[in-house]
Amino acid sequence: MTMSGSMNVFDVSARAMSAQMVRLNTTASNLANARTDYASKDEAYRAMRPVFRAVMDDNMATVDVERVVQSDLEPQKRYDPSNPLADKEGFVWEAAVDETAELIDMLETARNYKNNVQVLQTAKSLILETVRNQ
Picture 1 (cartoon, rainbow, N blue to C red):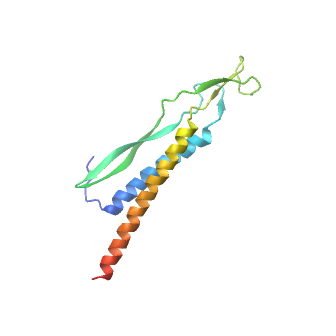
Picture 2 (cartoon, rainbow, N blue to C red):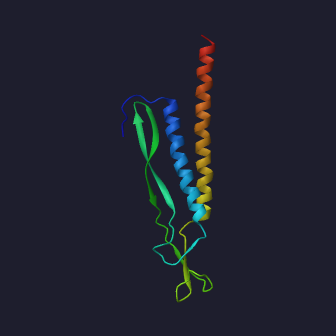
């Protein structure tokens, strides 16, 4: 996708940070819903994932979140006859969330966000140093 107007380093980092925040929020939502039981497979929570798209302008590239989709991970049936949500056979459905994968994704997201903060800090320092030396 091409944008109208020129992007600068601040635009690139801000868009990337915004995309990482969406990613972090979906991961947090997934973790909050993990280990939750449901009465049916159709009701069971499925992990969400942001879909990124490239945004380009001249020689600058960054990302935006195009949409958020459900993962392909399927809810699992578990025998738990004492659960009030259990069906007549004693089964409940667990949320379709891989907690280990979510935690890894959270760490990667935090690292990407931090990298963009460092880019902004470096750009700001370079601009201030340039202004001081003029």
